[in-house]
Length: 477
Ligand SMILES: *Cc1c(COP(=O)(O)O)cnc(C)c1O
Image 1 (tube, protein in one colour):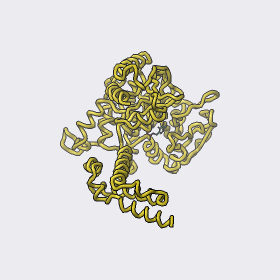
Image 2 (cartoon, rainbow, N blue to C red):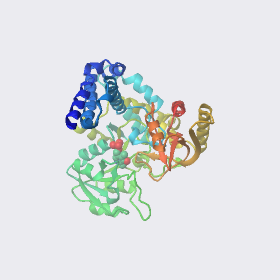
Image 3 (cartoon, protein in one colour):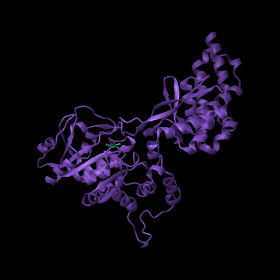
């Protein structure tokens, strides 16, 4: 008896479910149809109704038919539809205000572009452009020539080539120059960078035969020398980037390795990773290889990323001897790994800042890393005063200014954590996790740090333009 009644209840409830047509003509559907398109909305609507149906079927025996109506089932379906669409929209690329203080934040797209780079992208290359067209002659031109020229000149190299990222650059160098030959590398440099770039795997993939020498903490020039044989094509030096061995350590420098390679008529290749175009030790970044110096010290070919300390779009930069660069350019893999007009536009603009020596004013990554803590303190105090003015004394949002550390990120300078000024915030009604989530779900999204029951905002990585947006977001919480 009970069972039969339950089954009848369930059937009755299911009969109240909205049809796809009804849901499609609801207010919610009308609101989002211009974004989803009619076809996809129908698909979403079907799925939203199915969710309600499944819920009812699962709990059917315990439900009371009286408490259900067409209206409340429709509104359940509408809610499902809206939240699914919202979730999907959040999975799109969205603007994020980076208040984490991690300057080269890989999850947030690494380096933000300079104003010049943004303008160049929008104005010069979104339509047709002179990518492979020589304005002077009206004939076919050389792709990337301008960016390559500035890059080579900046670091004092004979020539340069640009590919998709530094991993691609390493694969191209090893494949084109060392396939089936031995590459000698220190055991201390067989590192993993950012989860999916493992030096031994990259070497194997490119057909180079890995010849490990030395130990994790110490490798001598004689270790390389003793390992050289007829099969040796290359000496490789990889910057360990995201980790640092301290204490009883030593590795030969670039000059020693370059000399040894030259004596044996083999190539010396350095993967500098982040790489600094110029010396940044004045700003605390003393462990990064200086590309200009590596070239001057005789490296045959050097690779580094364009979206780490260089502060541009994702690309892999290869600089070195003309003969080597031309060999790379002619290799079929180059065609696979080359970059688009969008990347060249961003790179040209960024490299021009270096050429004008205005990089510390114009390139966000360098501006953020070179700002003094006094300036940051000033910036944060001004921001806090504006926030106080907006939310008043009695707001449930509480904040104070504290001292802390920022992080360079992007696998660069792991030991360097510049002192910073932080805005520590909490809310009387929300837990720290809820507060952080509130920020993440705002428009634009705000990425913050959580530490010891406080949400921390580091304005080092928030640009002046974004400060007002952040202020508005905090005011609304
Ligand atoms: C970051 C890094 C890479 C990978 O660079 P991507 O541009 O992310 O491909 C390779 N080698 C070193 C030493 C690095 O630091």
